[in-house]
Image (tube, rainbow, N blue to C red):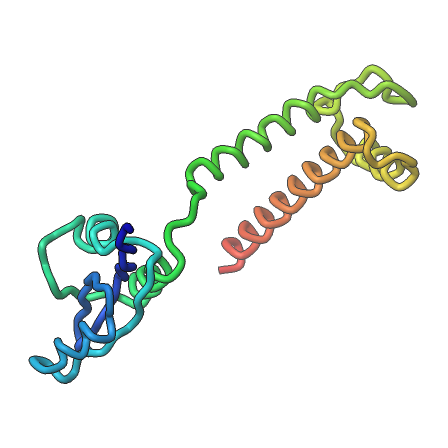
Amino acid sequence: MKKKKKQTYTYLITDGKEYRLGSSINPYQRVKGMKESNPSIKLVTFGVGVSKYYLLKKLVNGGNKLKWFKLDKEELHDIVKLINKGETKTNPKREYKSKVDTLLKEYRLNSNFEIPFGKNKGRVMKDLNGTADYKYAKWFINNASNKRERSYKAFSWFIKKHDKELENQFQYTLLNEEAFLS
């Protein structure tokens, strides 16, 4: 019969000024033993999220051999979260790249969309500009029956782009007026 391996926990303790990471099968018992030499020691948290070696390498001085170290509130929050819940599986760089790729794809699709109907038939979305084209796009969006249609998405993109340009233009005007008045 195989012996069942006991769970090892990563723990974080403090003496009120500095912090220390450790690992133990019984963190409560470990802290109780440490309190004999330093009564101000308190257990901050423990869990099975990540190992103490991972935390020392990634978060605390690149794996420096320091036993006690200082943490700011943000670092403390991150370490507690990692000990309790572990590392998330998502890569922020990959997520950002994915969002950028999606936006670029959307831009290419919408900016090169050729209008198949009406007074602007044959025109490409990126060539639309001005108030008349904006009003036409707004009219189309308000009267469109199928919001899943490719043309609806392209006109929606044009309206958002136009609104963003107007917003930027307005902010630029405000900045110039403030500079002029001061």
